[in-house]
Picture 1 (cartoon, rainbow, N blue to C red):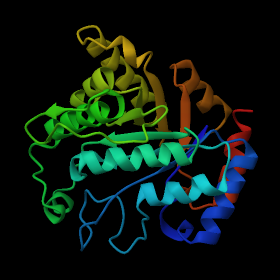
Picture 2 (cartoon, rainbow, N blue to C red):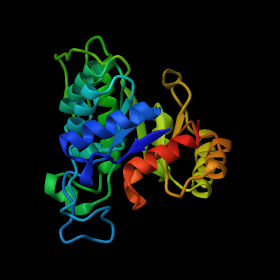
Picture 3 (cartoon, helix red, strand yellow):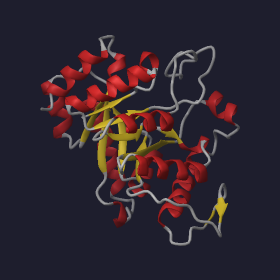
Amino acid sequence: MGVQGLNTGDAVSPAETRRLAALAESLGYRSWWAVEHVVLPSPRTEQSPADPDNPMLDPLVSLSFVAAVTTKLELGTGIVILPQRNPVVLAKQVASLDVLSGGRFTLGVGAGYLAPEFAAVGVPLADRGRRTDEYIDAMRALWHSPEPAFDGKYVSFSGVDAHPRPSSAKIAVGGGSDAALRRALTRGNAWLGIGTPAETAANLRRLRRLSAITERPDSLGALEINIVATTALNASVVREYEDLGVDQLIVYPGGSGLPVDEVLAKTIELVQ
């Protein structure tokens, strides 16, 4: 069981982040995922996930803090909007966080969707999928190649190296489009989905159809299925997710209107 979104809203202070991270770890949560939007449309648009004045910490900075106050929690971005980042700089940040957390970090990535956000950072929205694919490949070259080099449309480098190397460099690909599912199959160690059991079942059927016509590199191993639940959980609903083959269920405790502590305690009881 994982928890997502506690780098936003009322949870962003150092004291509250420290307290909630300790609580999640003591309750037996497996993972802690931080979300990202660099900026949000103001005034809020229909597509926007939050009001523009809702506090949201940078996920990598937030996770570095959480890494320092925990020892067992796996850490992940859920997600970083990859085409808005410089992949060479991000590769260094990922390696640094992986080393300082003792190999507990997973880079969750997505292609993004908010046009005002892309415009604000100066990245075209139209080619975000191609950028995402290329940036993943470029980062893996920096992490794994003995002599890193890459020559793509959006990023190119040679005659350089970057250390330390991350111990795991796991990538979770988020999104429910066919393009995102293919990206998870060809480039991801995990797929990070979102939805009810019925929505998850439909997405997994599409994932299986795509896997039959998509070549997956052996080096990636089996694709882990992580799902952010969007429905109220009870023992029966948790079993539905488990029966679908979900490896890890992730909850967003800030969206229920109940105290976060109460949601965390009640939810973890369902899987113990």
